[in-house]
Length: 185
Image 1: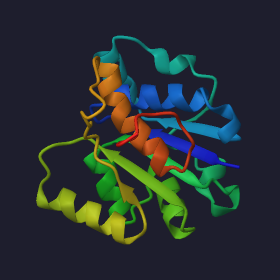
Image 2 (image 1 turned 60 degrees about the vertical axis):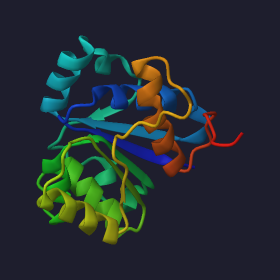
Image 3 (image 1 turned 30 degrees about the horizontal axis):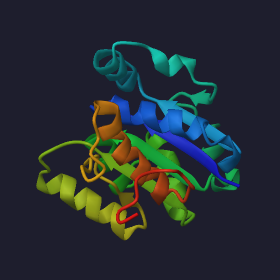
Image 4 (image 1 turned 45 degrees about the horizontal axis):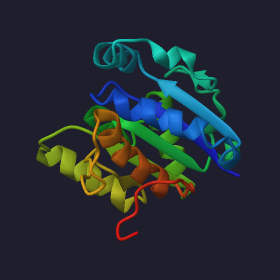
């Protein structure tokens, strides 16, 4: 069974985190533990972009950035998937260089060392060379870089549908069975 940790950083793209939580809560039979780490900057960006504090309404277990007692701060916690959405370039850089100074970077370090699934949904653009090298390092360490780049072949009609093209791809990468647009079907 899946034990999933979602990390939400202060990068722009709160809609991706919201939709991911919504979709995960709609398929509770596919995971048995769902934990969330939400940075202070993520809370501010969520309020700015989505004009609410809806992150408070999800029935999940929340952890602070400094809670190193969280079960996923150790490999023995056996969380098999970590999704960072949106993933700030600062967070990406700390993970790539092995700096585990908060729960997000520590949990990512654990997931990588245990050869489990780390999915970083980067949203920044354009990329500078440091971003690209951090993405390369995480990829070489076994992580997945999934830029928050929507697709258009499903003809999304709303911003939510457009953002869902990214979230559905992330759920696919996490190995979850979802109903979504499939090319050629």
